[in-house]
Amino acid sequence: MKKLVIPVILFFGFQALAQYRATEIRHYIKIEGSALKYYVSTLSENTHELRLTDDGIAFNGIYGWDFDEKFQIGAAGGFMSIGEAKGAAAFGEFNFFVSNTYINPYTGIRLGYSYIFPKNASSQGDLIAEFVTGLQINFGLYTYFSMYLQTGFMYTHKNLMVPLRIGIKF
Image 1 (cartoon, rainbow, N blue to C red):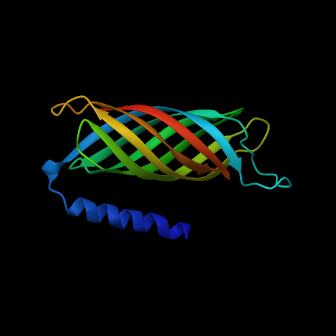
Image 2 (cartoon, rainbow, N blue to C red):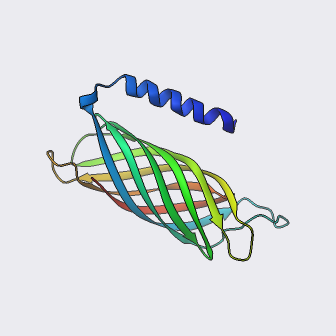
């Protein structure tokens, strides 16, 4: 199943690129900070795997493409700190916008991989899967600078977290 996800995402991504002219595609950079609220762990008590039972923070940088201001595809890298564990993450994102006004609600998904270096334990990597919803605030029709608030559900290292993000896009 995991081997099928990436080819399917790439296929639909290339199909979306083929539908748009080059003038309708704009590049963007997003910088975001987030507070990660621990929700629940799916690990049993008897396992030797990493348990992330604390709240955390994360910082991400995202480079992507905006297609006719209706949807975005991006690639990202970031840093996260959860309790005493520090780590890095790489993921892709897809966001779909409901409207094209000064205040744009949107929804999307993020898929990727995170690698955690826990204190006094071996390092561990795991899948990141996240459903997001947010609100982007544009500062004018002729400027590409905007801010956004975002939340959702993030599953990584067999733990469910609720991120609250604030970011800028330019």
